[in-house]
Length: 323
Image (spheres, rainbow, N blue to C red):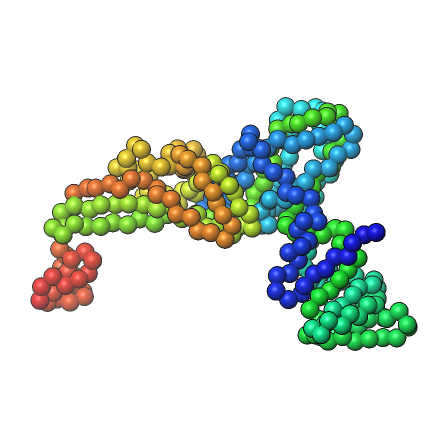
């Protein structure tokens, strides 16, 4: 007999349901993850991992994907057995489990309600709107239970079609049985980067130290562990290089050769590759040093601006130097 599923609708909700789903496809030791982040709020994820196939019709699921991925951009590619594995169907499942959706699946089905005083009410769920559960009880009557009094809802089983996390599902026809390295790639939104530069002038105003940081903002709905990180300066589908990129390129010659990022130019874009793998956690802004601090001699100049104040001279930062 199927054991009942119990969920407490107050406090930690659905903490039990995670164990009822198949575990996320674990990343093997040979897995490779590359994340290319564009400065227009998009990212390209390339995930290489070893998967198991069996002959005939087979299904593969990957759960640790971005919630903001573009389903039309997803590509699945076996790396060595392309002629032995035929992709028949591809689905992006994002109907994630929640209290309202779960109860909606149980309309016209039997549930048990436990109240604060430990009373148990059993019956067919007719409605749960308006602050009350409406049950068709076994004796033929109708019982209304205030939702504020309910501390536990028990259901005989978990309805099919629910996922705890966004999931990619593929249906294959395989003539191969065994393990195969495959690459999954897709575009995702809510993933971008920008650079900040900090200049510090010494007390004698004759030397300037310049440092740079890259901030990667990940709100895509997924964590990318130990990923090879690449940053692209320049927006996709645009032929013109933004002026900020040109200015950055002119300064690149002053950077130390051992900088964390390696820079390459291609077409109108600039590609910066981080020298070591890093983890991009979901809902995180990660900052990485863009280059080693560089120093350069500077000279303070004073300007006279009669349009602003004919009696004062100003430094370039517009602070008065003398009256």
